[in-house]
Image (tube, rainbow, N blue to C red; front, side):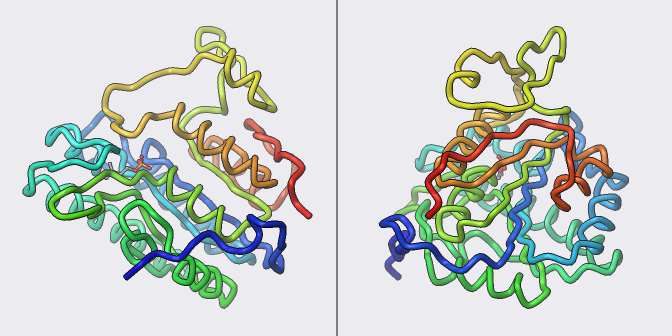
Length: 273
Ligand code: IP8
């Protein structure tokens, strides 16, 4: 199947606004990242209750945390397509399905209506399949919450690649142009200085270049760097992107409801028609 191209808005058209929210639950939020295969149930429960209470179309993407990243590191897998250990392909994929299932179960118990979607349903290798992505929006508008995740995906022949949840956010945003994109992280926002923990309230390309970030060794997809880079790409589409501490439920709720929130805003570039 050949992937579709990015739709008409790229060439100036503007699709109807459904009020869709794209929400990424970072792996460091829903799992304890430094402890292999350990979900943060308290946080998953809090976020599940919030999602169940939201009366807006929502698509959720989650990261790998101590599930996908743990095994990706063990098998030496990265975001570059390559011939990785084929057992590793199976193991990483299974670990993401396990994390997804656990999250989806909690969402159902909380009263939300999640619907699990593997990224290979709406991507061909690392490219978007536009019609499938548009279908996700129509599912969300109908009251069901698609829940997808960073994964290991087939690219060609025996080549596979890690496709991060952050990259999926950009893929989804490019097709759907949601009015709001939220990244839940395990810190209060983007630090201008990791030592003083000063948060940058609003960022643009210049502040990004002068900022310093913390790095963790267990993340094969680039941690905060990757988030900001994807966030800047999304902002360049004319979409506000916010980074919020996912471990603080009231902040998450405020960010979703559009109330004042604590975190970092990656302000949209004025490209929307
Ligand atoms: O945590 C990566 O997704 P991310 C998923 O969003 C895997 O970077 C399989 C490591």
